[in-house]
Image (tube, rainbow, N blue to C red):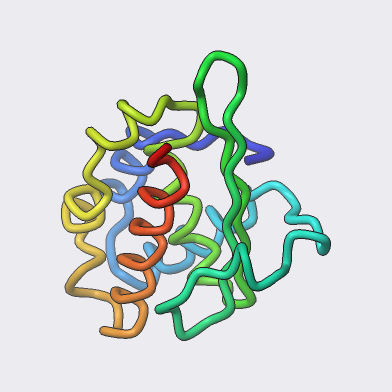
Length: 136
């Protein structure tokens, strides 16, 4: 991500925002923090299946065993959901990533009851993709 957004910052901001319209705007704003996704990676192998929108995700592991994720979507709100998801896994090891429960974080923020079933399913598909990418 071009601007490092962490889970605590997201939690605090969600708590400060009054209504869901403001929270949706914040989610969209978070999507703007994603690093650019290269066109060369917009291929079938990086596409996340199970999302209504087009979503691509890739991961690289460095010598220390930490993962760096890149992801993008053609939908603004989904880009924000990607940023939320990556806030819990970016720069972490496979062990740390497997210990992180993105669905708990999703529920904690209240997103589960405020997103359409299609968006929820897409979030779950992205979380599963991360597990797949980090299971060596």
